[in-house]
Structures are given as structure tokens and as C-alpha cells.
Amino acid sequence: MKKLICLLLTLAMMLGCACAFGEAAEAPAENLFTPGTYTAEEQGIFAPVKVTITVSENAITGVLIDATGETPELGGLAAGKLSASIMEAQTPNVDALSGATVTSNAIIKAATAALEAAGADIDVLDANRKDQGETGPKEEKTIDTEIVIIGAGGAGMSAAIMVHQAGKKFVLLEKMPYAGGNTTKATGGMNAAETHYQKEQGIEDSTALFAADTMKGGHALNDPELVATLANRSAEAIDWLDTIGASLPKISYSGGASVNRIHAPEDGSGVGGYLVDRFSAKLDELGVQIMFNTAATELLTDAEGKICGVKAEGEDSNYTINCKAVILATGGFGANEDMYTQYRPDLKGTVTTNAPGATGDGIVMAQALGADLVDIEQIQLHPTVEQTTSMLITESVRGDGAILVNQSGVRFTNELLTRDAVSAAELEQEGQYAWIIFDQNLRDHLKATEKYVKSGITVQADTIEGLAELLAIDPATLAKTLEDWNGYVKNQRDPDFGRTTGMDADLTTPPYYAIKIAPGIHHTMGGVKINTAAQVINTEGQAIPGLFAAGEVTGGVHGGNRLGGNAVADIVIFGRIAAESALEYIK
Image 1 (tube, rainbow, N blue to C red):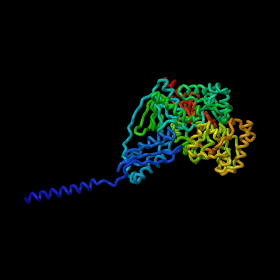
Image 2 (image 1 turned 30 degrees about the vertical axis):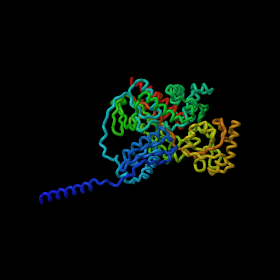
Image 3 (image 1 turned 180 degrees about the vertical axis):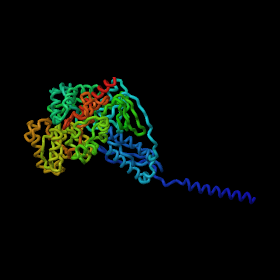
Image 4 (image 1 turned 120 degrees about the horizontal axis):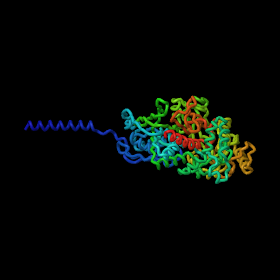
């Protein structure tokens, strides 16, 4: 009996110890959240971003982001990417999406507020984040194809559509997580001459006049042969856009042009976003897969100096892509201050309108093969950039009748001179800025203005005097400026600065709007040297076999100043030419 009692006591003690040990080892930590669903909002670029987060006691179980008021190509993408990132990391402090920083930061702030409402300590979540594990070496992959197109902006997508329609194998690389590049920033239209739209609307134009305007606007630094090609092939490019569902029928005036030549979407929306949407839809229809988040790092050549491949780095893999030809469509370098200040140190610290991927990678890779550069120091300032957001105010606002006034409330230039001239005039004003003034009638007829109002960068009033007070301008002075201007429009004569275009409508319809603007880096006119076949030329004047380029990565088309509407013409026309030449080369 005693032995049995001792055995039972021992067993009880062992069980007690085991239970105590188990409780010590498995006691749950203090809960991270109060279970439930929590919602918070933060202002994005154009609209509030709403984040709804569902949590259990110790986990984020759902993240729903509503960014429908933002741009679909960037805001919508940021919503999807950050939703997945927050779920994976189990903290709101994740990396912003490149190119959608404002929307990303709004999402992160709203997610933080929602989780704090759930009782979370964000520092604890950061300390326990789930996405910081060791990562092994990237997998090395080899791809065999015929053509590699580097860059999925307007030039790259134009080339890709052409190559696919020719039935050839190709790979389209894009280092950013989305397509578009600087094309998404284009807000005006596409210059083209002798188009069927001009003829239908009774506009007399010629390719010779287009070329002459471009040479004059570029201060005759342009390559005349490239300019002639741009002009001569512009109408057929408009026709080609028609065939892929990207028609540009609305024609208006743009600075530096002799006639109405800039072609835009029917509804007046920004041409860049419109074309990126149409190009992307066409590529989807054709079944083309873009390799996003994959940056080309090196162009490969064989023993004879011919292009034979591309090295690239993706998120999870490194690639060696064997090919016969490469089309560089990597854009300019306006987002790379270190690079542009090498050539223009005076521009250090200047706001840029460029997409974040415009860092000059293609230029550097081409230089490594001996490519020559042309006009590399020619960097364009756009005169109407809202400085706190880097938002470009399309030239169409001035083309449709807006005026510029300084802080004294008076006009100081012909608003539709070339961009370099208007920028220089602004920099001579008090504070080196100006106000762009327009009315409700202009807003009603130009869809592009809606995003300016929605983003909160406009100042609005029911009267000119009321607007002047909000701008800290003398009301009588601004009223007199508008009265004079409306008289000039009525008489179709501007005795002050000789403006003869963009005077189809006066500014008499309230409410009235103003946006504070100043110059910003907009376009890098210089880049790798090409010929009219879009072949890249080396420092010895010879074409690099198998290497072609189009768009802002190249130099020579725009000279010392790019006319508004010529960049879109450049990417479509030379993107198509690069594809044609590459296809001919690989035969």
C-alpha cells in the first residue's frame, strides 16, 4: 500500500511538474491585436485611400485597399502590391512602390492608423516582421530568343507590338513593376503632319513645315536627317495607332508649332496614360508577357562585336538572354541627379517630372560597347510644373487659352513660346515662379485639368478679385490683366507679347482657377547616337551590329529644345523603325 501511495504521489508530482513546465513553455504572449475589422483613410494624390484591415488576436488576416480614386496604372498597382506586402510582413511598414510614392505612403499611413486602432504596437510588429528571413543566391536562368527589347515605355511597347505582329520571338524587359516609363508623364499629344485628321478638319500642314518648326525649336542643333524622318513618317504612325485602337483625333496648338499639329485623345485626356493603356491592352490581346522587375545590366557581344545577348537581374533570378538583336528603349536620365549634374551641374536640386525609372541605364550600357553620345548636355526644363508634387501641367492648358501671371498679377511673356523661352522668362520673375490662370470653360473642355483639381493643387474662386486675394495679388491688377487679355482674344491680337495662338476662347466663365508653377526637369534631349534606321552608332561612326535604340535614350532628334508633342512622335515613330530594322537585321 505504501509503495502504491508513493508511486501515485510521484506520478502526481511528475504530472504537476510537466504541467507547470508546459504552462511556462507554451504560455501565450500578450495579444498583438483586439480581434476585428478596422478602417482608416489617408489622402493620396487625387483622392483619399481607404485601408481596411482584419486581425485576429495575433495576426493580420486580411488587407483590403481601395485606391480607385488614384491612377489605375500606379495607384491601383500600389494597392495590390502593398496589400500583399503587408500581409506577408505582418506590419504596415513595407517598401513603397517605385513611381507611386505618394499613394504608397498614404496606404502605409492608413494601414498604420487602422492597426493602431486595433491596439497594435507598431514597433513590436516591426520587430516581429515575417519577411526578413535569409535569402539564398538567385537562380541563374538562360533564355534563348531572337530579339530583346529593353524598356516597356512607349517606344518599347510600340516595338514589341511590331515584332509580335511579324511573328518573331522576343523578350520584353522592364525594370519597374509596371509599364509606361516617362510615357505615362506625357500630358499633351503627338505631333504629326499631313494626317487624315488634319485634312478632315481643314488644317493645312506639311512635313516640311513640321521639320522646319522642329529644327527652329531645337536651335538647329538637331540632326536634320532624323528630323526629316520624324516628320515624314508621322502621318503613317497616326494611321498605325488607329489600327491598334489608339486613335488621336483631337488636334490643337502646341508651343513652337506653326499650325495646329498636336494630336490627342478625343476626350482631351493626357496622351501618355491613354497610349500606355492602349499599348498594354494590345500586348495583352497578343499574349505578350512583360518581364517586370527585371533590369538589364549588360549588353553582350560576340568576338566580331555583334550583339549576342543581354544580362539581366530579376527579383528571384538572374538571366542570360541569348539573342540576335537588342532594341534599347530605356528612356532618358532625368530622374538621375548624379548623372544629369555631370553634364549640367547648374540643375542640381531642380524638381523633376520624370518617372523614377529614367536613370540612364541604357545609355551607360551602350557606352560600354563604344556607343557615341550626342547632345548629352541638352536638358529641357518644362515651364509649368507644380513644385510640391512635381506634377506637370500640360501645355494644352495654355494651348486652350490659359495665361501666366507673376506675383504682381501681370503677364510677362507669350505663354506659347518654346519651353526653354517660357522657363527662362519665369526664372526672371520675383520668386522664380508664376501662376497659370484658367476658367471653368477651359476645365469643361480639357479633361486633363480634372486631376489638378482633384489633387488639391488648384486655387479656386468665383471671381477674379476673389482669386487674386487667395493668391496674395492685388485684385485690381489681376482683374485688369484678365480684362485686357479677354479683349485681346476678342480682337485676336496680343499687343503686349504677340501671342497669336491659343486664343480661341476668353477667360470669362467662373469659377476661376490658378496653379502655382515653376520650371522642372522634363526631358533629356541627348543620348546615344542613332541613324535614320535607329541603329546605334559608335564613336568611330560605325553602326554597332544588332543594336538599335528609340525614344529618350537617343539624342539628335530634338536638338537644344524639344517641342511639346515631339516626344510622343519620337517614341512611336522610332520605336516602329527600330523594330523594322531589327527584324530586317535578323533575317
